Amino acid sequence: MLLSELPFEILSKIADILINEDKASCTLVCKRWKFPFQDSLWKNIEVKSMEQLTSICDIVKHSTNGLSFSLAIQNLYFTSWCTITDLLQSNILQVLPNLKHLNLGDISFKTFDTEISIYGGPWKSLVSLEFQVCSTREETSQSILVEFLTQFPNLHDLNIFPCFPHTSIYFDVGNINTIHKYLSRLRSIKGAFTFPTICQSDIQTIPKAIPAYSLTSLDIHILNLNSLWLYYQWLWYFSYKYPNLRTLTLKALCETDESIIKEYNIKKGSLLRPATTLFPHLETVEFNTEDFTKWSHTVLWDLLCQSNAPIKNLRCWARYRTYEEGALEKVIRQLVQSFSKTLETMSVEGYLFFGTENIVKLEISYCPRLVELEITDNGSYIELDNLLDNCIALSRLKFSNGKLNIGSDPHEKPAYHGLNILELSYVTVNTAVFSYLSFRCRSLEYMYLNRPKICDSISDETKRLYIDMSYTNFKVLRLDHIYCYSSDRLMDKNTAINLILLSQVNSDRLSNGTRQSEDIVSVVKHLSWFHVFYGLNHTFDSAPKVRKLSEQEVCITTEYYQNFRFRESTGIQESMRSMNGQTLKSNWKADLCRGYAEMRCGNIKNYCVPLL
Image (cartoon, rainbow, N blue to C red):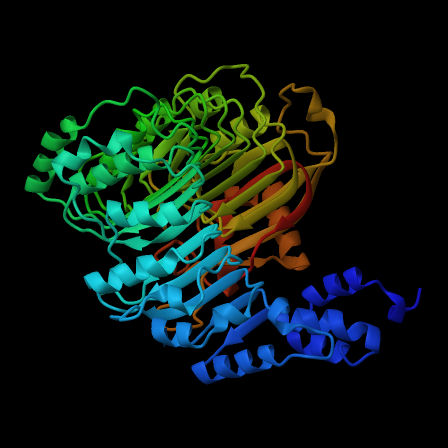
């Protein structure tokens, strides 16, 4: 088949993946190619000014030559500021009967004397609407906004935000009811809103709210700052208004003091206990708070943890520094206990800085369905053996800014575990953890280590810090600036080990699950030697860097340790070192007497060690 004979459908698919310049060129190839590529050119239109919008309207109205531009345009994007008056008077919505997606950019809903309906609405083709409101909060502006929204009866997705920090989009229960009355097919709402406090008399009517069954996704940023009670009220309302909700994303900017907390504790008991499960179909919850206390968390989980909702996916950002020890750990423990039967993925991201003296233990209770766990920046330590025992289906673990160890009494013959991906960043970990991990998790194929502190005592016989992962066959191993220390109590410049050997075992002898001696040397292949040093590329630049040893340096290093030269090195003068314990690249031999760290794996298909 010649290119000129390709069917219209195939040419249209090709056109959709090309940039506009290439589409324009293709329209000139032959007569058969003109219409599919021209159609694709007009499918997505960007409006940079109101003058351009007027020109588009004129072209559409007078389009000929076999192509109706009015039907071709499906997506319209505004990159210029406009008003509701400009938009309606342009008649753009009337001349585009096939418009599916409309992004108005920044738009103002100022006082408007004429009813919107006289401009030809409702417009039934639109399924997605997005814009940012520029006008300040005025009652007339809000009524115009609501009236405008009701003109799109087949809308599925609504995305609206205030344009500036000082502006707000004010919605009350009446506004929401009006919107859903006219937009019966609305599936998703995303935006930032200011809500009023629901009066006590209206609270009693919330369980009788007319449900909006079509809505399954709610992503809102509540801009009210001073009322925990308001947060709780509106979550309570949403649980009845949106019974088919499957995804809830909530961002909080709540500020709390003793009076606000007292009000919340007193009033929350006034709500009626539900006879049925709240949010009966809710599966995914994301929560982001910038509150400096734990209370905004409390509001959300007070309701959800009692809801019996079948939540599968939890994601929580806690952007606060709490003075209450272990506050975030308590939140995590509460969440896991409440949703242990259904939870499949969980991510908790904190914003905490900690010292090893006040690090808090994080305990994860039995959670048989959990497959992905991500704990970031919450100042805790995890006992790996207990985690694997309680999360038997865990496939991916990501942990940062904490400590990973094994319990004081791990099982001698633990059940094998299916952990497949491990990501550790800025984590303190003992070599025994890697040995335990390798023996128990035979399915581990991907490991990413980013600036971990690996510690243990070194052998007096070999001068080696041994990281035994000889049961593990990696598809991908990434070692990004790993730091090793010859002491698990004092990790400083005096105990830093700066020579690192990556090796693998060229045998399948370990696949039967029996522990073997680490001293079988004949089947071990040295892949690479690395040196951690510091350079003086910039003023005050003492951050550790990594380089690969040359062949000659490798020979010197292996000969040094194989012939036990370190036993003769007691009189070597110590080199100048950085605050992290590294010396200059040219003084690398001064690190020989400190010993080396070896990470020995079963097999490594691909490995990456970022240099410098």
